[in-house]
Amino acid sequence: MRYNIQMKMADLLENAQAAAALDRFLPGLRPMAEANPQARGLSVEQLARYSRIPQAAEALPALDAALQALNTPENAISPREAEEIARFQALDAADQARAPKPQTHTQNAIYPGRPWLDTKGERIQAHGGAVLYEDGVYYWYGENKEHTDGQNGIWTWGIKVYASTDLMNWEDRGYLIPPVLDDPDAPLYPTKRVDRPHLLRCPATGKYVCWIKLSGPEAAFTIWQADRLLGPYTMVEALYRPGDHKAGDFDLVADAETGKGYLYFDADHNALLCMELTPDYLHAEREAARSYPDLHPPFTREGPALFAQGGKKYLLTSGMTGYVPNRSDSAVCASWDGVFAPLGDPHIDDASCASFNSQISKVFRIEGTDTFVAMADRWLPDIPVDARLADVFTRVVASAYEPDKYQATETERREMYAANRLETANTSIADYVWLPVTIENGKPCIRWLDAWAPDSL
Image (cartoon, rainbow, N blue to C red):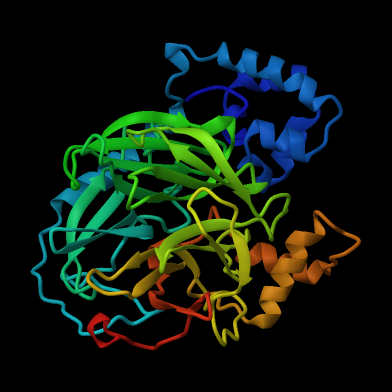
C-alpha cells in the first residue's frame, strides 16, 4: 500500500491513521466517500477536486505529506491486500495446473464483432492491443482480460501475445509481460488499470521498448524494454508522467526515414499532445504539437491510432465515454510533429453513431501491401449502442461541463450510469472489430464487413 493523495478513497479509509489525517485536513470528505460507492473508487485528490470543497487545493499538499508519512514497513501490505494476494496466487496456480489444449481451431476469415478464438479454441485475450510484424510473423499483443469478470477486482492479468502468419489464425505465445501477484504497488498488479500497451523497436539501441498506460489514480506510463520481442522485459519506469502531464490513452510511432519516435497521448484530458521520444525511446523530452485542444468530455479525444500513407500522416481518435463506444474522428497532417486537422468520422454508413460499436486501439499495415487494418475492441457486447443511445450518452456527459448547452433527464442519466460501468464490466467476453481502412478523397474510410480475408482485399 502506497499512501498519498493518489490512492483510492476505499484504501485510505481502511487505515485509521489515514482516515484521521483526512478528517484533519479535509473535513467532510470522508462522509461523502462513505455514502457513495462510486466515490470510494476515486483517488483522494480526484474526489477533493470534484467535490469542490473550499480550500481543497491548499489542503491537499499537507494531506499528501501526512499520508506519505504512513509509508512504513508495517503499512506496506494491508490485511485486505494480503488476502487479495493469496487469492491471486491461488488463481495463478489453478491456471498453471490446467492441462494444455491441442491446436485444433482454424478459420478462413476475420469476423468483426464475433468471438475470436485462438488455435486452441479459446478466446483471444489481447485487448486495447496492437500488432508488430517481424520476420514473416505478426505478433498481436494486448491486455489479458481472461479473469476480469467485473466482480473480483481484476482489471488486467498481464499482457498476452499471439502469433500469426495470416492474420486469421493466432497461436497463444503466453505473456509478453506477466502480471505481478505479490506487490500491490507494482504497475502490473492485477487491480491496476493497465491499458493499451504499445511496442516499438528502437533503431539506436536495438531493444524493444514497451509503453503501457495506467489509468485511474496513477494516470501515468510504465515503461519496459527487452532484447527480444518476446522478452523477458525489464521495467525502466514504474510511474512516468511526461512533462508532468496526467497520461491518458496513447500511441507510439516511429518515423521510417529518421528513426525518431513520437508519443501521442491524451494529456490531462485537455489536448492530444505529441512529444518527441528520446533516442532510446524510453522517455519523452520535447513537446512538438497539440491537436484537439481545450475540449471537455465526451469530446476530448482519446484512443489515438496513427498511420502514414502517401506521404501524409493520419490520426483516428474516439471521444471520452469510458467503455461505452462513441463516434470516432479522423485527422490529417503533413508531418508527425505537426498539428492534425480534423476530417470527420471515418466510419461510413454507421447507423450506430458509435464506431460500429467499438473503439479503435491501433492501425497497422498488412505487409507487402498498401492495405491498413483498424484494430478495435467491442468492450460491452451485451450493450449495443444505437443512434438514440449515442445521443443520450453524449448529452449526459456533456451536461456536466456545459449545462446550458446540453441537457439530460434523470432517466437518461441512470441509463448512462448503468451502461458505463468501468469497475464492474465483464470484459473477459469483450470482442474485436477489425476492419480495413482505405483513403478516399484524402480521408480515412472504414466500412462494415461481416467477414473478410486479408488476401481477398
